[in-house]
Image (cartoon, rainbow over all chains, first blue to last red; front, side):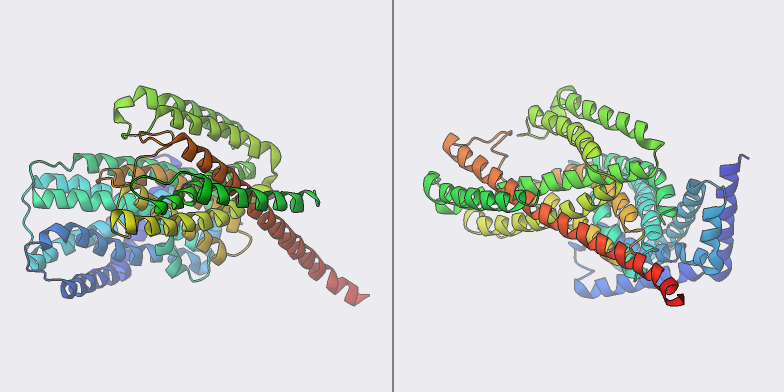
Length: 227
Length: 288
């Protein structure tokens, strides 16, 4: 295994192991997402037929909010005992660390989604009327879109006062096109109207992922070493 | 330089009054909308000015990031040139994909302006100055963008019968405004030493986001009038003249505000540097 992938792998396994033992991020995310679901159910009638139209938005907004909880904790762990400073002075490439962190968050958010989706189906009586397999690329690309920018902006907001509030302030405006694509794609698939297709939104989501993954990899070193 | 500022100020005031007279008195009244349409002479120039300022902010931010790492300078030059050429070719290559009412020539102008302004900023500004330029243009840009977002609904209420609609241009402008407000919030909240780097990175992300925002929202129905200049709509030449006069006046005004903000920022940084230096020297003088 070459050195950069070795560093990525080591960081990733360390993070997953830590999470597996403590379950800090997963538990807080799960509980938070559950609260969002319950709170939303009071703001409109979850039994109504129109709920299907907004279910896609609901699911993704809940996941986005919950993801922010996990993303905020990404780098906090590295601040203790000056781990991040040690990383900064080491010759290890910054991008290996970034990729490891982004993949770690991707795994955590995916686990959250897998656990929450059945709950959504039960609470909002969801039934997929369109091609259900399309939900898989939407979920993967959508999760990556949230996570890649989220990890980057979490590293950025680490340097600010009141960093917990800073992350959503930076992340949400930039995520708007991705969120719109996820919501529209999911709604199109759930409603299953034969005249519309989710393909456009999936392609747009993929473009978003490519553009911002490149952007993050190009700029992460600069942000990490910003002093 | 000291004298140029008040002269430009007077010139801008004169130009703005002349433009106001042109917009309210000289310009012909629109047939269907009536006098409400005259808000157009403020709405459109503000929008163009705001977009231009955000554009400069993007270029200054790239320039700042490049200056920090001299190795990237040559790569950045070629990337900028390649992007410029790509933007010039793309509208002709993918003509069918172009949203209705957008002329290829207006996109080509953007491409040329992109390359030209980049190298102009590179020549004229030092590393610290590019950061000050980015800050100034973002702040003034947000103000002009706010003007756009306020005058738009004022016009839409009598003409469309609604204050707001989630149409592509309105929504994109709103998202753009949100991105740059978050940029200003980041600048306010980060510790001073790292602010320029973090802000520059965010500015690049915001600029990358703009085309995606536009395309994603473009998929919805568009209610906004087609662009009347460089687009599919049509405009009375007399109205166009007034519009352009107003735009020149607004540009001068924006330049004036940017300039004074820039001077303020420069003075502020000089004071901070002097204070830091004095704080360093103080213990030594106490020992003496």
